[in-house]
Structures are given as C-alpha cells and as structure tokens.
Image (cartoon, rainbow, N blue to C red):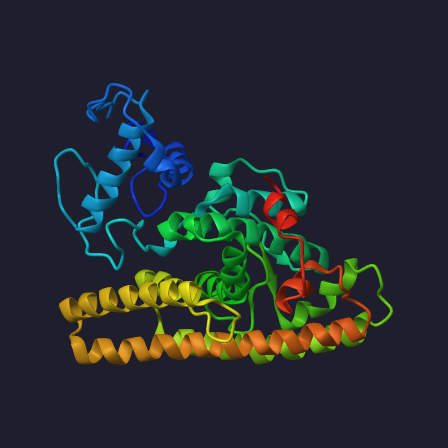
Amino acid sequence: MTTCLVCGKKTPVTHMGLDVCRACAVFYKRNKPLEATMACVEGTRECDDFQKGNYSCRQCRLDRFNFVIKTCSKGNDLALLPSCSSSPRLSSPDIPPLIHDQTLIDRTPLYQNNELALRGIEMDPFIANKEEYEIAPCTYQVMNQAVRIMIVTLFDFAAALFPEFMEISLADKWLLIRNFQTTFHCLESHMRSQRFFPTETGKCFGTYTTYLAPDASGVYFNDCVNKQNAGEAARTLEHCIKQNCFTIREHLDRVKPNDEEFMAMLAIAFWSIEGTPAHEDLIELSSRYRTEILTRMMLRYKETIGAMEGTRRIGQLYDVLGTLKKTEENLKWEYEVYRMLDLFDDHTYMYKLQMHKPDTICKSLNYLR
C-alpha cells in the first residue's frame, strides 16, 4: 500500500510509472487535453488539497499531477512527494515516465478485464492486476475481439504519452495506430513472454491473457465459423509461430531490453511512419518525436554506460524493431493464406487491420466506450 502523490489517498496499485492512484490517473488522462480551457475556481492556482483526498478544483488537481510528473522525471526528492522515484528517466517533463511495468497498457482494466470477460472470466480488477488467472490457448474469436480492445487502448495510450497526438486529425491518429499496432502487439507480447515463459522460446502471448504455441495451434481455429480447412490453417499457424516467435525471442534474449528501453522502442515505433501516405506536417512531427527520444536515450546512456556503448545499444534496439517489421510482413502473408482457405474474410477485423483494408473508424473507437 502506497500514498498517491496527487490526492494523498492510499492506493494498492500505482499507475503511469508513478505512485498515483487509478482515480487520479484516469482524471489526468481525461483532462490533460482540456488543460488550455480550464480555470482555477478560486482564481489563485493554489487550491492545494493534497492529503485531503477531495479536489474541488480541476485546474489545481491537474497542476498537482503535472508537478508530480515533472519532479519525478527530473529525479528530485521533495518532502511533499513521498515514495517518488529518484532515478533518471528517458521521458520529457511533459510526458509520463517511460516505465514498462506501470504503463497504461500494462495496468489498464479496459485492456485486461474486458479480454478476460471475452473468455467468460469475471474477476476483481485488483486480483486481475496480480495476473493470477489461467493463461489459456488463444483462439480465433478471442484474438479477433481482443484486437479491438487493444486498438481502443492504444488510442488512450498515445493520448496520454504524446500530448500533440490529441491535436492531430482523426485520420492521422488512425494512420499512426494502424501502423503501430502490430509492432506493439509483437513486442509487448514477447517481452511479457520472457517473464511468464522464460524457458519456452516458441511460446508467446497471442492476446493479453492467452498464448500461442506450436503444440496449441490446432486449438486456434476451433471457434471459426467455417472449419472446413482448419487443419491446413493450423499447420500454417504452427509454421509461423515457430518462425516468428523463435526469431523475436532470440533477438530479445540477446539484447535484453530493460523497462525504459522497452518503452523507448514503443515510442520510436509509434512515430516510424516510413512507407505510409503521411503528409508533411505529420512526417515533421514524427521526426521531431523520434529525435527527442533518441537524444534523451543518448543522454541517459552517457550517464550510465558511455556514449560509445550507448550508440551500440541503440543499434541493437533498432535491430529488434527491424525484426518486428519483418514479422509484420510475415503476418500479412499468413493472413492471406487464411483468407484463401476461407477462414478469414473481409469482415475479420484483425485481417482488415493488418491488410490496411478500409474500415469504419468510429466503430473501432466506440467499441467498449
């Protein structure tokens, strides 16, 4: 049990890489984009309700949260901020710290609990956060619905991590998310697989709460509507699991990215839009974010392992990202095989997403809203 640095209440689970409670994290996520339109109820910007646990002023509550982020990201140790980490981070003072095991993705109930509900498992969010549930073999229906949940969550993730994401058009947001989703899925699932399945290099998370493995490939198509060619599809899936999972795990086991590097890779991948039909403004924004991330990584490396070793380390991380991009191309081929076998069609959500088929964006964003 720790103390929320924003409202002062006790919280069993922390969020966003900080000692903040879920209520304050949700408040920040919803209100940060509206900051420019806020005003202090007293007009003083000094409505300090810390440790009273009942903010009546949105502006001052947001000020407090911004102060916590800025202070912790700089590693300052202030008496007003109990339990605040003093380690340097790769993040900007205006961006939540890039810490893997406390990210919005890793802890958000939307991503985890709704996927458990797809499997017919109702679980208290606190127990779910402890990850004390059965990780079952992945199936077609669970994957297809879980991808929808992941997409909705990625929009929230991007909005919280990158302030300017909220200012771009819906079409540009969708382009970034669509381009990013496979890299995120593969990297996040294999990083978690290192922890959950350390000796099973051919086994990985298919969704957040289910796994893929060569010996479980026959189960995957059990809930397809058309099972006529399920056997042949299962053999294709088994081959692809062996090809992709072993390759990605081999790279990750060799490089062993830490939590900050994991989040830095995600951030770089999010803004890597080469080969997409992006306009000049989005390309410029993407370049600026990647430059900032790489600059902060190099500064961090200079303080720890030295500039030369840091340059080599960044090269290794980019090598991992290159492997993930190759996996994305493999998935496109794999999904086309399933379509030819009449197991996937134009209504299969994960197929449309992977193949960049036209889709109704509002349906994706409103799915679970």
